Image 1 (cartoon, rainbow, N blue to C red):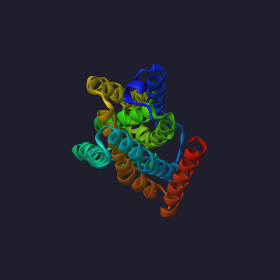
Image 2 (cartoon, one colour):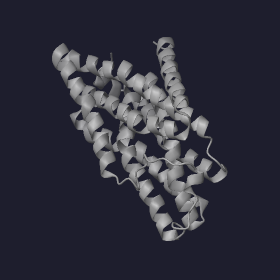
Image 3 (tube, one colour):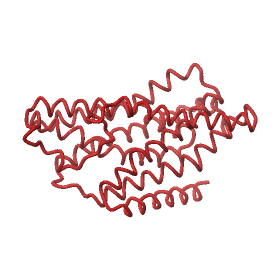
Length: 278
C-alpha cells in the first residue's frame, strides 16, 4: 500500500480526486434542472437510486475504507492500537456529521427532502420574502453539509480511484434532491431560473471547497497516522449519511421494497467492481 507521502507526491492523484469531488458537488445543478423541467417526481426511480447510493456507500465503507484505514494505522502503531484508533476515527466521523446535522434547524435541513410538486408555493408561503428565505437557508444548510462530504470524497479518491469513483457517483445522486430543495423556492420567489440555478450551483461548490480547505489545513500535519484516522472517519461519515439520510428518503419516495432492492443492487455492483478491479 502506498504511503501518504507517495500519494501526495503525485499531482495527478490530487487532480483526479479534486475532479471527482467537483463532479459530486455540482450534481445539485442536475437537481435544479429537474425542478425546472419535470412536472412530477419519478418517485420509483428516485427511491431505487437513493437506495443504490446507500448500498454503495455502506458496502464500501465497511469492506474497503475501514479495512484500508486499519491497515494504514496498524502498519505504524501495531494491530491492536491501530484497530482501536480506526474504531475511534470511524465513530468520530459519525459524530461530526451528526453534530452538523443537529445544528441545522429542521426547516432548513437538507435531509428533509421533498418532491418537485411539494415545493410549489402554498397560500401561506406565497409571500416572496418567505420563499426566498427558505431557498437561501436551504442553500446555506446544504453548503455546510457538503463540506465534510467533500473532504470525505476527496480523501477516498486520493487513497484509491476505485473507491473515489463510486463514492463520487453516490454523493452526486444524493445531491440531486438537494438541488431541487434550493432552486424551486428561489425560483418562485424571484421568477428567475438563472438566480435559482446560481444558488444551487454555489451550494454544490461547497463540496470541492470543503475538500480543498480541509486538505490544505491538514496538509502540514499529514502523516500515515493522520491520513489513516481521516480515512476511517470517512467511513463513519458515509455510513451516517446512508442511514440517516439516503435510506429514509428512499423509503419515503417510493415503496419500502424498492429502496431495499436499490440497496442490494448498490452493494452488488460495488462488490463486483472491486472483484474486477482488484
